[in-house]
Each structure stands twice: as C-alpha cells, then as structure tokens.
Length: 66
Image (cartoon, rainbow, N blue to C red; front, side, top):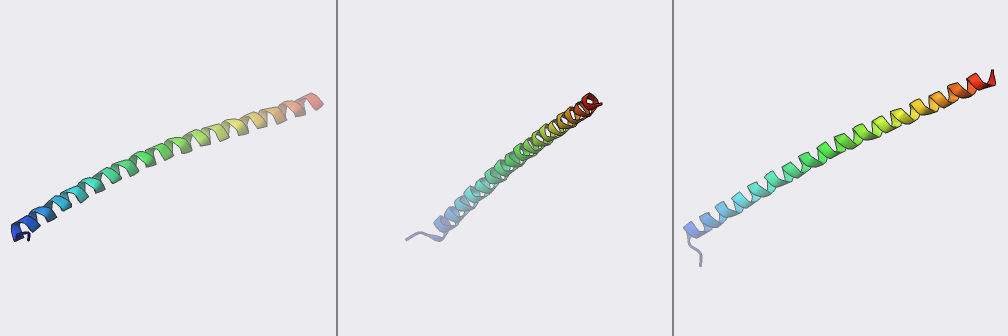
C-alpha cells in the first residue's frame, strides 16, 4: 500500500503533467487562432480583388456600349 508521501508525490506529478498539458493546449490554440486570422485576411483580400475586377469589367462594358 502506498504511503502518504508516495501519494503526495504522485499527486504533485499528476498536477505537473496537467499543467504542462494545459500550457501546450493554450499554445496550440494560439497558433490556430493566428492561422485563422491570416486566412481571414487572405480571403478578405481575395474577395476585395475579385470585387474590384468585376467592377472594372462592368465599367469597361458600359464604356464600350457608348
């Protein structure tokens, strides 16, 4: 049977492992959030470029009709 000091040591070890796991998870979530921000920026830029191109095409077609 485990002694009181053994149990305390095991609990401390488990606490350390949990702390490390939480730290690792927070880092991973932070990296995922950064990737999401970069992706959102890229999608926004692509959408803006597509809208600008579409507007230019419409204006050129109007000009050609005159």
